[in-house]
Length: 184
Ligand code: ADP
Ligand code: 5GP
Figure 1 (cartoon, helix red, strand yellow):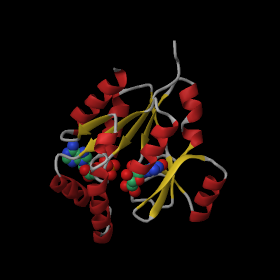
Figure 2 (figure 1 turned 90 degrees about the horizontal axis):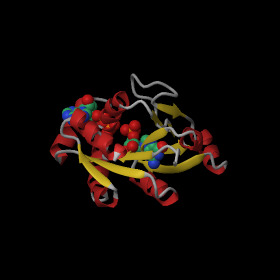
Figure 3 (figure 1 turned 30 degrees about the horizontal axis):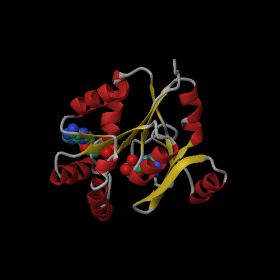
Figure 4 (figure 1 turned 90 degrees about the vertical axis):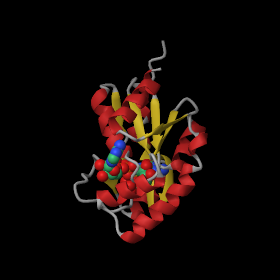
C-alpha cells in the first residue's frame, strides 16, 4: 500500500476565497497540513509569521532560490512567493497530506515536477463577485486591487489546465467538494 501523502494544490484569483475555503477544509480533515510559503510581501494586519507566511526580505528570498530551498516560486503583482521544500517533502514521505495555496505559474511548476499532485482551481461565481470580495476584505489599496483584478482575468483562462474546477459560491460547500475530490 502506498503510504505517501497526497499533494493538493489550490489556485485561483486573489480574493476568490482560497484562504477561507482552505481553513474550512482543514477543520474538516485531520490528515491535512498547510504548506506555509515564503513571500517578500508585507504582512497584512492579523497575519502571523510562520503561520500565514514566512515574511522574508528580497535578499533572503533570492538566497532561498539560489540554494534550491524552494520547490517552486513565482512573482505575483510585484512580490515574490515560493514554497519551501521543507514544508512539503518530509510530510509527504511521512504519509501526511499537504495543501498548497499558490498562484498559477507555481501550480504549473508543481504539476510538472509531481504529476501525481491533485490540482484544483477555485473560481468565483462571477468577476463582479470576485471584485466585491477583494474590496470587502479591505486589505489592499485601489492600485493593488486593479492589478489583482487584471491578473484574475488571465488566471481564469488557465482553469481548464487544472484537474478540477470548484466554484466558491458557498465556502462550506466548496470545501466539501474539495474533500470529496481528495478522498476519491
Ligand atoms: P483569497 O485567499 O483567495 O485571496 P480570502 O479567503 O481572503 O481570499 O477571501 C476574500 C474575501 O472573500 C474575504 O473577506 C472572505 O471572507 C470572503 N469570502 C470567502 N469565501 C466567500 C464566499 N463563498 N462567499 C462570500 N464571501 C466569501
Ligand atoms: P496573497 O498576497 O493574497 O496572500 O497571495 C497572492 C497570490 O500568491 C495568491 O494567488 C497565492 O495563491 C499566491 N501564493 C502564495 N504563496 C505562494 C507560493 O509559495 N508560490 C506561488 N507560486 N504562489 C503563492
